[in-house]
Length: 357
Image (cartoon, rainbow, N blue to C red; front, side):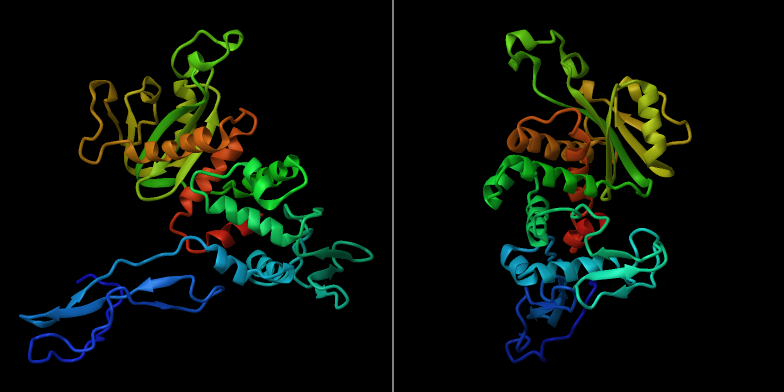
């Protein structure tokens, strides 16, 4: 069998043909890390067989993608624990000056989590663990920031700033709104690997229907652009990452520029729908289109169901959580959903989010 972990845990078969003292099928073994016990790996168990005595059965790995609230409370009991965690994830190879990158800095004994760099300033530059991050110049404890980030990462369809305001007990809605937008900006993936393999490209429209608007705000158009909706285009690598951008129009040149930016030339298949905007993609790409107008949705490996599943997450978040998103801040919301999707299998998604902060 193709099992990643094989352990002969059972004794020899008894008279009835069953193996003695077999462990439970769902037994897992935690291994050491930043949070021992949070990450677990599946093992293969050997269950009894009347004919052959013992047979191996592979158990699918059980992955914990997010810390639960009790685990989070145990990991971050106070601000010092949060600062120590931030140090380990921000500078995994050693403390460096956030201004010049100098790694020859010395710690200030009188102030914990503060250092001084003698290279980039005449009298020395003193900095703390939050210098150069979104947490700098804030009057909120770092533990509060960590809690907000945890709430945003554990909400599959997002969490509104108003809900953050209610749950955290902030004095004003603006505080929660500002913190959420700073976190979303930090989650944006500025350096990404171009998508390869089987890639799906599609566009969607974000916004309410024109018929539901007040009489003096109706645009009179129909469809996506005609109803003054916002346009988002995305590309997803099959069983991989997604890249999404807010665009101004659906011209063929806009689609082609996006594909050149995010899709590698080494794709085995570039799947799109039958929109005319995809008719002028780079010729070196193996482009095929599925004809939705003819009610054709899946032809072998040719479909756009993966990227449409990502669009459903964003739209359910806008409709059910945020209710209204402006064009100005839509790229931040798209970046948030993109980060959660791309780290859906990352057991340390919380640490990954902090590295961008």
